[in-house]
Amino acid sequence: MDLTKSFPRSVKSKLAGLLMAARTTDKARAYAHGTLGEYHYNCPMDRKLFDFLGLAHEEFAKQASTLSDGQLEQWLRERSIAKKSALDIERFNASFLGYKPEPGSDGERFFLELRNSLDPTRTDVTTWPDLLDLDERRDVPARRAA
Image 1: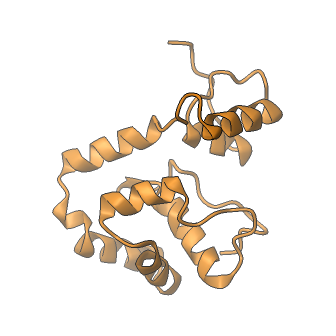
Image 2: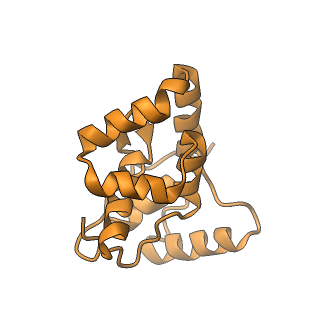
């Protein structure tokens, strides 16, 4: 995976039933091969995944860099996911879809600057998964204000 030439998969793409896992896998492979580009491996979103899985980022990168998606999925199921209930996974995925920057934080300032530079009309984009998709030119359906 060369992230200097392409985007990683969306946060919303699943691997082993988990959001973020496919994206983190792409970043781990690029990290292992020195082709991360502007991306950051072991960022806060990756760490949320690692915390849920009970894995260290280096262990994940080692496995991701040597295994296919199917083999990695099997390893994750045996190593970690088998210990999780369907409800645990559902809650994890739901929390990821709603992951927002902390109000008043540097992260929120960065989030708003990036969103406004991409499309200032998209004030409906309030979560990291949607912002990353918008930044990587994926379709982000407009949401109505709550």
